[in-house]
Length: 489
Image (cartoon, rainbow, N blue to C red):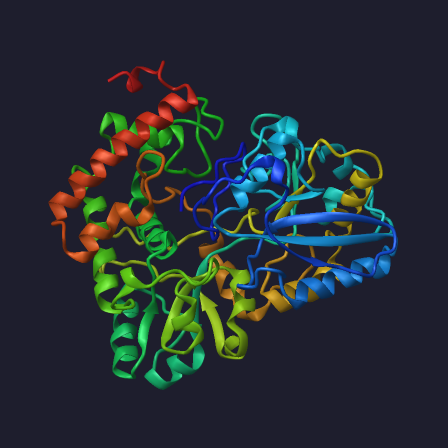
């Protein structure tokens, strides 16, 4: 999916597109679950439901967590406001801009640094809920939440703005009973093995891979395949660091300056770079062999598992998903495990270099921040909740129940989602996939013509090249790169 338009450019890995803008003066338009137990100060937490389809509650694991917090802090009560998936970003962005946002706001809301209370100083102070702790920041796993890491601090202010309650990863859920019945062994190692598994699962009466018409399934598949196929170009096009200065980046995003230069100079082009066409061929091969037959007519039923209905019902044997989708699987939980998407080898493509499948584990899952308009006891109470949520013993039961990947040190990863952070799959993508189009271009619109057979491969490549150029020109202007010689062509 497209990056979230915040100063941190964090990707939205599960939460759909923006919907109708809501007026700032009307307050939060969503359903809420009132925590009850607190007898003193009430603070409100507002964000989307990442775990289930309930419009009024994040689910029993969350309610239990809030009850535990209020047992520790009886003078503070938490009100949870559940915002619609298609509207939460605009709703919260409007509230932040108007200065009327609640005490705790989901971090993917677009904002300017002055709208958020910086947490940098507080993170250097002891967390009062952990005896002997000298710095709150020390409680977090430094691989994912530490200064200097991409998307952790504001690129504008340099401050920490939010606290992660979990991490985000992407992987393939699979039904263990379906695999056993079809004679498929997990994890599936190679793309060739995946196509063979699709044949076996089809013969056993299953839809091999659940798919719907959201951007997620198509987008994640393209990104994963393209990142492997174009890995050989990483050192060639990598000319700028993460800040856009001359140097080297640890890994690239399709919106990075290095990618922009590659597109506008023709170092990489849809028609001139054979690995791009090969990516499309492999994508179509996978869709033709294994996904839900009428996938373009299947509306998304979840922001955390692609075509949740078919997978949850047992009709489909595999599905793309994120860790917090585990809680939505209901009775299927004990029959589900997870794995990376398979690696493409020369058995599937002569252009393969053997680069392993990668997706990456990072912050950007469930994270909350505090508006700068708060002060006094309300700000103190909000900080207390964030500190409490950073303690292993406090969050482990919630992580276990929801399939959450911990952001704090020492926590265990629930077995059902462990495959999503295994081996090189958990490493960041080096190339980041393929570029998109200008603002408003969906992942689905980039590729559906070719997948449905209404565009030939050549027509598809022309379509991509046109959108790449338009999208890159937009990025160049937005980021002030238009003074570069390569951007003037």
